Length: 181
Picture: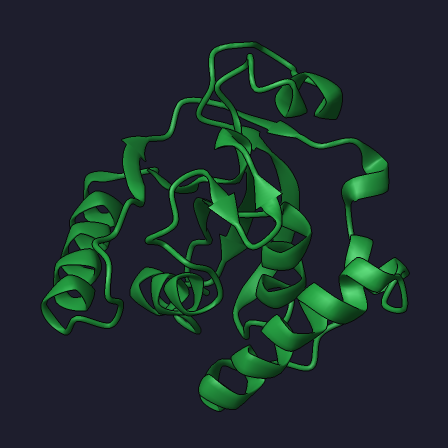
């Protein structure tokens, strides 16, 4: 059995990322939380105040024998706009920035390579603004944020924002799709 790895990614609202990554084969656990800032153990309200430096992120535990870090990054870049600084759609503020917090030199190298390839392919009209930083700390979000889409699929934000991202993921990555929870 392969040793599990951890990835920490932010690209807008963590509810969106969590819903998709819960359905990626090989991903064993997804936790919504905060990272990339300076305040220990921040609350949602503190992060939303834009004074903590944290981004809304998900921390994934995955089996690299089933899904590689590069494949996780391919999904990540397909489900958010990495050219939009401090915003995703109507979610605005530095807590919604695009960020990869690498856990190893190999993850850093893989992220740099994927980002270079996407830029060279001119996938977007604007340059990437995704931050690439070393992982320092992760703080799980409050319990009511965990599994949000799973528990609230008919809420307007879930139906109008998250469901279309899930549909795009299933269409673009059928080989990585697991119907999930």
